[in-house]
Structures are given as C-alpha cells and as structure tokens.
Image (tube, rainbow, N blue to C red; front, side, top):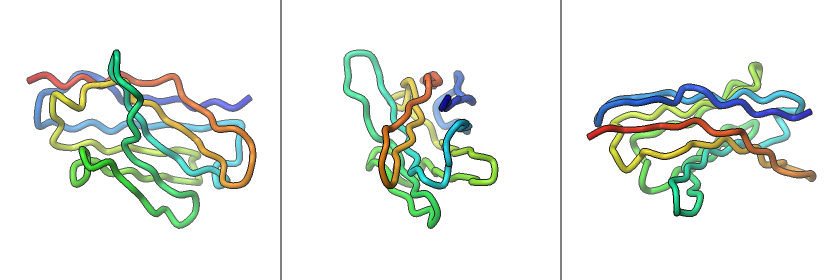
Length: 118
C-alpha cells in the first residue's frame, strides 16, 4: 500500500534550521506533485510549499517565502523541506501530501512535529 513517512521534526530555537524528509512508497513518485502542509490545533491546515513532479517548479506560502526550500529526489522517492530562520509561529505539525497528476486519490503522511522556542 501507499505510504508517506515524514521525519526530521523536532525542537529548535528561534533562528535555527531543520530539514524535513518525506519518503514515499507504493506509488509512482513521478506521477505526483508533492506538497508540505502544516497545522496547529484549532486552525485549518495551511499549504506551505509545493513542488511539481518532473520539472521541479516550486511555490511557497508568503509566510515562508525566502526561508523554506522544497526539493525532491525522484530516484529516492523523497521530498524535502529545508526550513531556515525558523520562528515560533512556524511551530506546527507538518504533513507531506502527494497529489496525482492524472487521476486517483491523494495521500497523506502521518505528520512530524516542529516546535520553535522563543
């Protein structure tokens, strides 16, 4: 079955960096655009970054533009989110999402917690 497994979350001080990873299995990775979302309790899930499948074009939320970088290594079925200059407001559960290019359903990972202390 399809699995998306995130890793790399943790506790970091303001101004620090983390790199999140999301490894996909059970799907044809190139057929999916990959996205990172985040969510805090009581709030809607927020789209943070998107990367297309083959060209690798990217889009970012205004709140993270210039600080976060999304990338993917298709040979490893893995998408990354490099997060720099972290702020307390970046504290959230971060989720990996795979959106099909052609047809089928999307998939979600289980999430990884990022906590930024002030």
